Length: 484
RNA sequence: GGCGCUAUCGUCUAGAGGCCUAGGACACAGCCCUCUCAAGGCUGGAACACGGGUUCGAAUCCCGUUAGCGCUACCA
Image 1 (tube, rainbow, N blue to C red):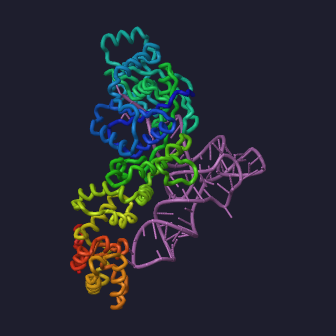
Image 2 (image 1 turned 180 degrees about the vertical axis):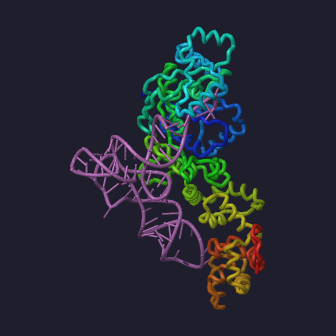
Image 3 (image 1 turned 30 degrees about the vertical axis):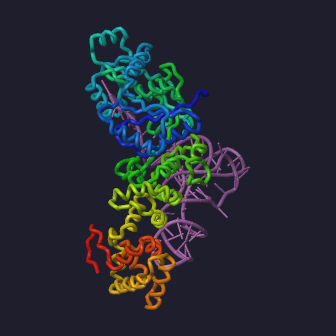
């Protein structure tokens, strides 16, 4: 083990969005780099020209930025290093660690089919022992061919930083292609060539790469380099135990950003998915995360992504964040919803709604209704209440409105409002709840909110009295229903 | 099929031979608070996959079984 300064890399391929698994891998790399005072390199593996797009690259960069994962070097684009990849592959050829292979795709497909039918492993070793002179002659004639790496017939083992010792044997691996017939490098070749060139000391990546690792180690050795430390972090699974994918719902980091999840909550949640500092920590301040992080706290079994817990955690961050800090982003969201916020103090409204929200978008919806109760829509619970109270709904509403109208503008405080409603209800023999709930429905369309007197205070006297006079809000359009 | 990895409450996990009649968190249920819903507090149900060893003693170490997952491309 060397004492060279730590250099890690995150190497996504821009063939899709930044998903939560990739984000967590990036986070672990970042955490490890910060913890060790090392360098975090970002490398975009865009060698699959068919599927790579600039749009995906941008989304990945944006996602990392949103999560606060900053890179010290890069982004480098793997596609730019084709010459070096080829040179490394040819070095393998020159030292006899690789050979020219003249199978056509059709021949290989046929062999693969035969092998499957005969229930055996496909073999592609026909050219392994072709005399070099003959191979060179055929190549010189322009005969299309690939370059295949000669896998050594020996045990290839390493001490994985999360799994401990993992061992493969060369005899279980076929000689694999390192250079395509068009001269471009195959994944394992490109990765090793780049990781050597970028002096990567620790490769922290997904578990799905463990079977690539022995091949890469063999490549390192054949190229005359010491392999880095490998740390294979387990997969993230959906709630059905299968690898997390689109059909499990939101898997892209951008989806969570759009849902109003805080980047810090996402970091906290992702960090704890497959890693633990030991003990009972759940909400870990970001500043402590780096100090706490270590590779051996990484779990060796896969973890199921639990959206509920993410939302709970986001709610924790929401309640921890002062309203003033929430305000700018909230104003932006409200503008997008068509709610005018200019010149209006949001602090009290945010405070009122915050404790009942788990995401920023949910919070924005609640704030929007308080700022502009005209946008309230009757929901199922609200409708049920209207139905249950029948005539008393409007009667109680009128009772409350009358009592509140008597309050002077400068006496519009939660305490005064509560006193007025309580007095009116008591005088008329109306249960307090039967007086309060209609107000709640009239103002929000639903039966859920902060205490009614606080709701009224936040909405303001003029608008509140107007809404109480208007009665039952219109039904939400999706489910039209008769309104009392 | 071959190779590899993994196995503690439904889920995330603590646990590195005695501290474990297995702890915390999410979720769930009940209670308190209360005009509703949250938040908060309290309480409850809920797990060491199975079988063999090793040991005075095993969730922890070893072996096997079973199950799940990953890889098995001129994709990355």
